[in-house]
Length: 413
Image (tube, rainbow, N blue to C red; front, top):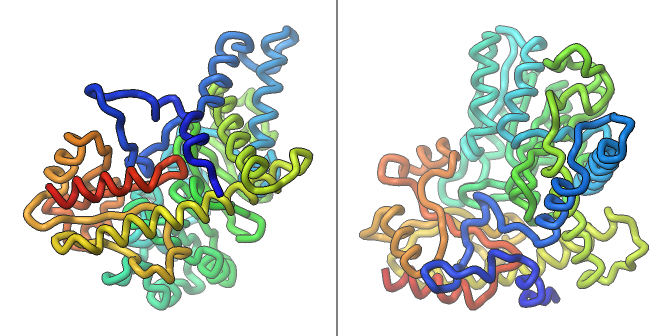
């Protein structure tokens, strides 16, 4: 079992006081707190290694080593090869960049499938690609009761005209984990690309792009205890074939051809440190030998984290169910905890989401309110015009006591 108190001591923000009181960080889906090793790695880079790449002098060579190490760490995180992982500003920017390159392959006879469950970063780039190329956008609907994808409807949209299917691994609004492997198979059967937004899944479970057989997958390090850096996986053959918009001296070597300009070297150092922190949980709590591969350590770590997060989810949802004036959006059955991540959205009678979030903030409970850029599901649920939802997002450094304090504050509000 995870020693949560020992884990919490490794996150400097968790020891801070705001208005003289400790904070409860339930804003994790918008960005997790940063592990101490990440801060050290970024400081180490900026104070001792800071230089541009491919020079003959010491700090430049050290920068090259930092980048190479980060590439391997990111590849281990996703189950990919280092040359298949592109670093960028964030998932949104990387998706728009890829969309621009894919546009050359799309035309008026083509169709793109998106879902009403997704963050808009996995919708707008494809809608705009369709506008630029004349392609048609098809929208997959959701089951309103469970906030899960209507898989029959989604499957009915995929046909010989489909060129791309974009779907989230987990919903940033309601926590639903989608059956992306099945959806990828449907896309593959008609020769369509699959694009997976794994931003909300990455802080909770192991990703294996080879087992999924997806064409592209994106996530962000600041959602798994690291800095504001985005990662994009692409199959090698796609990254080699597609045209990247870049300066002429950049060359065609992967993945550099996709990383325009000077990279965020300190961010890459921090990303590697965050991945190594997660892998370390596999040694400390997962029973994996220190000599095991990083990938093996990560698999063990996510197993331990997942088991602990099931306890957190159960405590939160059970407590919310006991408050008659609260409505929970999404999966609420204890038998289905494996079908959701630890992100729960609610509304309370008599309070707008903003008013409830403010009352929780007064108790130093930090939660998000609004649509969280998942505007389509907010509209589909009929809550967009009245302020959206209140989102409570848990991470492995949160505690059962924090959940109880949050529940009490919601009940009193």
